[in-house]
Image (cartoon, rainbow, N blue to C red; front, side):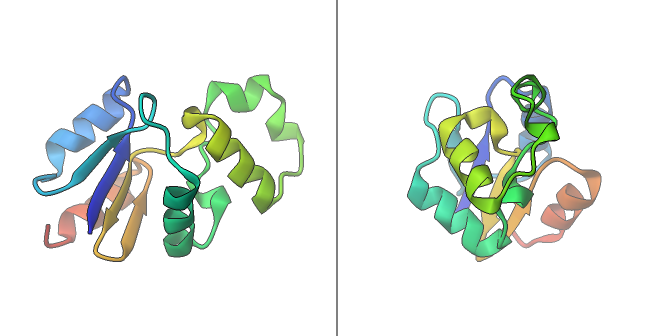
Length: 115
């Protein structure tokens, strides 16, 4: 199973999708086609944390005052399902492994995978 969840308007996502061989991947643009509860559960099973999937750099995170709140895992799940911008992106699912976000370390590890 190979999937990638990304945001079409994100320049960083575009750059990473060009760098990584995504041939054979199921590609999901999360703004036009938001993630489902089932897909989020699949990501959670691999990451073991909704917080790890959560984008704390989203503008909405600040504007809603979420940084000043003590959020639980169920809060993170709720926000991830409500608003696409809260998913840290891109998210790659590759043969039972998950790669979350755009840090250099994550992308280098992804590139080492036999895709």
